[in-house]
Length: 435
Image (cartoon, rainbow, N blue to C red; front, side):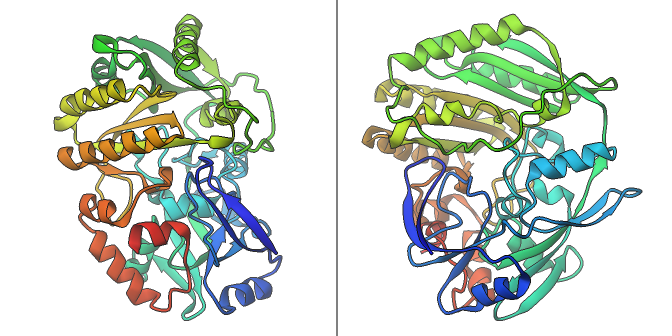
């Protein structure tokens, strides 16, 4: 079946075959058929990572079972189509917790592996690889291959954060952690700008289980990035939760865009005061765990044109100069950033993974030719400061820039070509950033 796939940001679309096998013999047949394939889960990446013109997108929908769960050790084996929200519910009901949670519950385990995602606990938990013990990867030329840190470690490293290009993950074994509490206390700390936000986050990092911020990037001068730092910690007592389900599609759009230079500053100011007035609150685990869930209207407000997101990881030593550069570019562009957010990162960068140590800045803007030029200029900022960008969040990145910012770019490309010389797995993302 031919269909049109569109990235979550709404700016990239491709026409491709949509294969939806419901048993393994059909899955392997689809992946072994002539032409290139790519696995597809919920399709919530901001670029076309699980689709490409002329590429067969193979669904993980039917492969969503929990195969084994050791409730004594927290070791769980699942198929790739298990949604992270369902994994979360099962784990919590048994006294366990996935240590790394992306923002939306409909993201699949396969998607978490493909991009080695991070969550709100990145400052001490790291990326999704932190909770992975082993994987089984199917490739038509190699069959099913078990890989882990001890067995086929090169394939394991290449697959986690490898954008689904090494093959179709048929099962994954994860290591959960003991549930630290039954609710989450969220503290809201008002900050005057981006520089103060990071100082507050650094002073809070040891005590916080989760740590992130919301910042108003439409402010100018000393107030650039005025906002709220969220510091969360687990509490022992449960609180009532509101079960809302996970059916809403974050990719839905309103017919007319409502976010522009006039509306965004007003909405940002109203949001900031609303959050400050809420003060501290105690939340149920689901509400705290998935902050995007229930706020999908944000994506719809961009309308049919969509938006662009830029997510950069900046060395701490270059943070002040980077803030000044970003502030100047936004002021000169006349574009209203609809979102600004910060996280602290700790870890080691490998291959094309979005990981390392420093400050993560995320910003969104409505899609327009001016936005593309702004993002091109942000690319130059990242090059100057020695940072990296998140390839899953940006649908316009090209190979030359990606090669220049990732020290192990050539190694990733060569290892992938050695494993998959026939290019049996392909996508729009691969074509853009690897050529």
